[in-house]
Image (cartoon, rainbow, N blue to C red; front, side, top):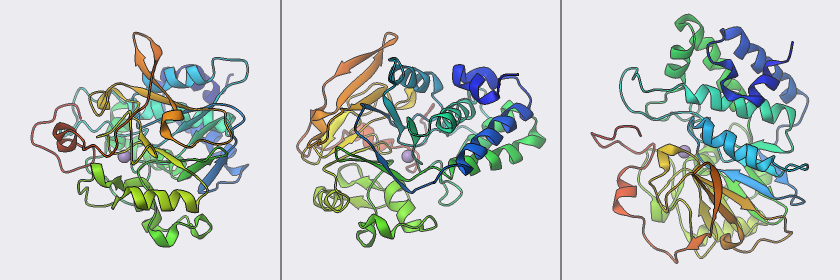
Length: 338
Ligand SMILES: [Mn+2]
């Protein structure tokens, strides 16, 4: 019989309605593939092909499968990179809302299956939600989604296996052309030198996975604001000139910090933030990228990916509405669906 990993690659919902043994079989294949290859914290990505990048997807597997389908449309697939936060629907309703669609489970299974068979072409970084057992996030939903999708008695074991697979993912990537990719921010200054990075360093996790540019900073209980000057200094230390990230959505789709920092989100949850839309970014096949405006943005509209130029705002502030409902920030009373 065809493996579960190949069935899920063809259709992320292949697991829907199937017993837990199907997901476990898939995770066995994912674990075996991971055991066969090195697991660096910082991945070096060749710039011999375009790199298609997605931001926070939070269970929006229709957007993610459309993005990966675009990256793999040609005979030689573009490389593809996920900036983390594949899980967690952040519905904020308690205890188990009927609207919770289990999307985190199918999204994570789909991406892990692709990463297992094509690790050099489908690169997945960790987001703060993938590190939520090291640094907790408020109201995470993966366990609740698993309890809806499977028998309650099976959910904890599945949660442990799925989180275990996600916790192996690298923390950051660096393209040959000089684009640094991470979920949220930059490490503390003592860790600008990536040879000092250690897997169990919580300060490293906090900096890369939780921090926000000072323009979007709002206290999330963890993470630090970073300035344009600090970003510039860090990028020079790792041999890069531009950074692409997800996480704080206030400037999603817009370049800030003098064209050095681009934020994207790839989820219906964040379609109203920043410049708006479900976004994908193409880092061109180029040996030297100097500015975020050289990155090609696409927005999902009417069933296809439409080009949209990257706009730079010198140091413009995020809109008040964006700042008032940052994901993972302390929550306003009424924020349905976030
Ligand atoms: Mn995040």
